[in-house]
Image (cartoon, rainbow, N blue to C red; front, side, top):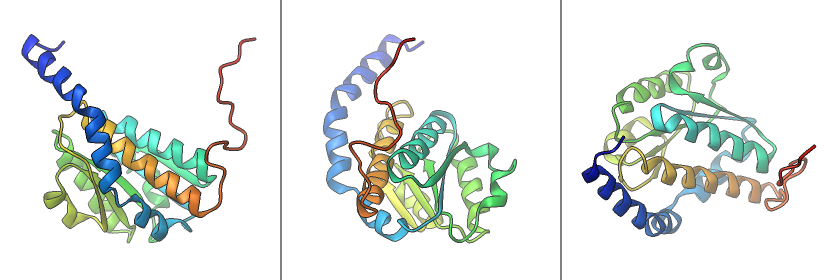
Length: 183
């Protein structure tokens, strides 16, 4: 439960969200990253805490509109099997935002770097995290509950540009029902 003071601050930041999303859209390097990695056979997405669902959603969006293999993981689960699949041809998108999990996620980044995997960090701390990544997708620092929303925008942009470059039908992905059916 949020205190009244935290609730007020959260609502104020929430009101800023449309402008922050526009800022991400205006400054994103997702198109260049898509150009570099469009031919990859697989993509991994990792995150901890609030960023774990962002990793899952990033992988889902990549699969849905590019038809490429993509998997999302809670970063701590990377050691339990998926790390065996990481190599120099597997870009790893790491959600590393300024929360209490950032140091642990950077540990996972170092593990994939040791296997020559290219790392794309989605972060609100590019000066600190950038040294561990091949590329950085920056997001504004707006706290652990809202920063992941902006990280998700960056990942959606990467998926969009990969799909666009591959000539995929972005608005009508194959085999996906975009409505709820009732039996």
